[in-house]
Image 1: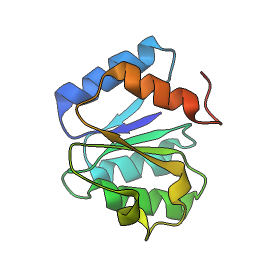
Image 2 (image 1 turned 180 degrees about the vertical axis):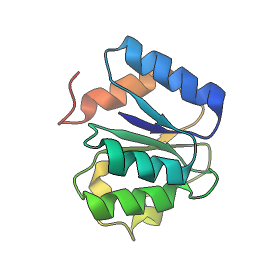
Image 3 (image 1 turned 120 degrees about the vertical axis):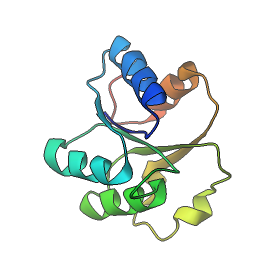
Image 4 (image 1 turned 135 degrees about the vertical axis):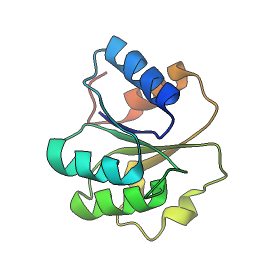
Length: 120
């Protein structure tokens, strides 16, 4: 999994939790680093991205990743009121799920389990 989160504390929490569930995790600390990691380390079962980040925001990251792989599963984790309609300019919004912050990591794990291509 690729986690794109600019706050170190939250990035570490994602990594620790997801690794404890058996997932391989790559962390990127801004939107551009996330794109670079995607280019260098793909494929990823799942990309989890924050919305508000330096260099590129989550919507820009989603658009770029889906332009490279329209089937990529992505979770946009955000405290902002982002709706699916705002993702309409991306190529395949059916693969994008929105998870409202704050959330429990169990909520994230339940969302992961609903994604067809991912190991439970």
